[in-house]
Amino acid sequence: MVNIDYVKEIKRLKEEKKAVILAHYYTVPEVQEAADFIGDSLALSEMAARTDADIIVFAGVHFMAETAKVLSPGKKVLIPDPDAGCSLAESCPAAEFARFKAKYPGHTVVSYVNTTVEVKALTDICCTSSNAVKVIESIPADTPVIFAPDRNLGGYLKSLTGRENMVIWDGACHVHEEFSLERILELKKEYPRAKVLAHPECKAPILLMADFIGSTAALLKFTEEDPGDTYIVVTESGILHQMKKANPGKNFIPAPPLDSTCGCNDCVYMKMVTLEKIYKCLRDESPEVIVDEQVRKKAEGSILNMLEIGA
Ligand code: 13P
Ligand code: SF4
Image 1 (cartoon, rainbow, N blue to C red):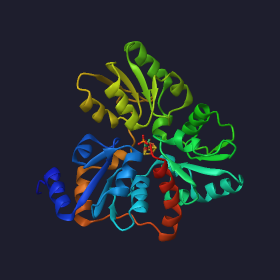
Image 2: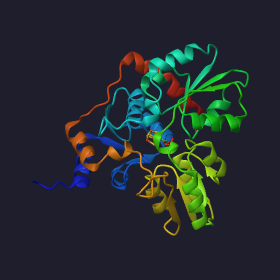
Image 3: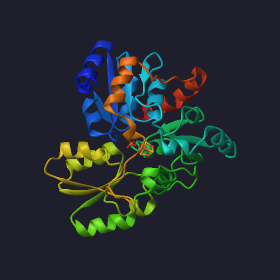
Image 4: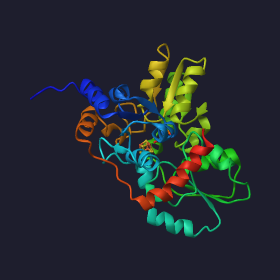
């Protein structure tokens, strides 16, 4: 069997094919290191909209690659593993969501980008955890809102904005739902100086005890600017790679779910992306993300509305 140097081969294929690799912070460290650009969902969609590469390899989950295709229909968008889904996006099937929407006429529909392209096609404005507050505040206070699909982020937005006229779809992410308040409190006893950093997809009791709440990019930025030295990180463990790189002298402790043996919490879908799969998809220019043009056109408006609002 021939041993392939994936890092070298990926670099060669990228240059040969004028391709760019975009990776989310939750992917494994070696994938992050092979990427041209690493970011949170918002930064990755902004990058997908403005890159001049011919091919985008999306090292992340399916809805992210789909968003890139919606924004750059003329480019080839490749996904290293098409089975890398998202439990949150799956918790909101488009047909059920259409029936839900029909029950609330006159509502503006705001959807988190963690949705399928068909749900985005039923949406007025998308948002990510980076700009959700700004998106909600861009809608007149007397206009009722449907927020989908994350109930935890929805509840957090409702408490931050004081917006009572918001109905929330009952969906969740398996990773953020599983973090254990009990285990975080135990870690706080062990590391009394540690600050708790949480993603807004976590449940309300965890958000209530967190020192800082934000998207993956905002959590990373906080660790760079904060004078503290120890952090309990309550989001997917992939982000710790960039936190440690940016802050070599600081201590980062991943928060675990109740029954964790590894002491951390991984998104099984993000962890499906490997260097070998990136190499093969660049070599074969497959699997490619294909989006029906009619659905794409309907979904595009909701993503562009979000990009216009910005971070
Ligand atoms: P970010 O918007 O922070 O990138 O989060 C994406 C995600 O999938 C959270 O689970
Ligand atoms: Fe989806 Fe949760 Fe994985 Fe993010 S961490 S991609 S929301 S399953």
